[in-house]
Length: 328
Image (cartoon, rainbow, N blue to C red; front, side, top):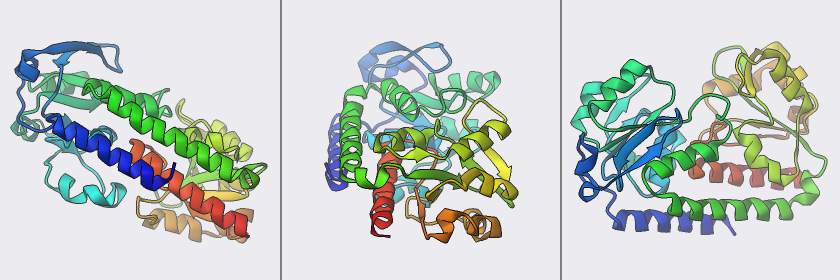
């Protein structure tokens, strides 16, 4: 299945969801939506939440929920902040019309004006903040941080369950798996025995390392690529949390990616590097990597996968990289 086919399928799911009535006003009372019908679901914190059976006005407090909502054809009534180049081009105008109701913390007053009937919040908020949100609408907390962070499909599934769109989500997942399988089969001659590493930079004079157990690892795993053992080792020595990722000084880049045949560097959804990632690649230590010396450095899209749009873009990027690597 080609990416074009997958895009059409995503659009089809979106159209079906929109026809089902994904827009409209909300209410702080869960029973006001869906003709008064409610259901009880368990969120990522283990709390049982009574929510509308068919939410009509969903507010998202982080892009990790916004993307899945959009993938399912539901435009939020309020959203967490986002970077324009990190969302699909076709969504820019629609999202530009949606109020931003959260940055590091939710803007309670502004959120209330959007009149949501359901709030999707990350599992990182203080209890006091969640209590304030619950005065506006039912709050479903999804997995953003913690030991399950790498399992982006779990988070996406949580969001889809909260808005009662699990059937539509399965269609997206089936298409995604089919594309993974196609790439794996078509490029097995390239991936066999090829070692990769993935790097980003979020602060000056540092590199951010992504291990095999992180989100991109779950995307690349079916291809038969070998993740850098050096990168995993350096992460294990420097990680400050259970998550398989770590920020390190630039001096450790050669120790973390010196065994990689291909180095992927985080980009936006236009294939562009930001200023910090560009500085990383321009650093002398990065330039001396065998992959950089051989010209085998490629953008991989986002290293934190918010949903299937991000994941599909990563598939597109890895296929382009494998095509280029095959020709060298």
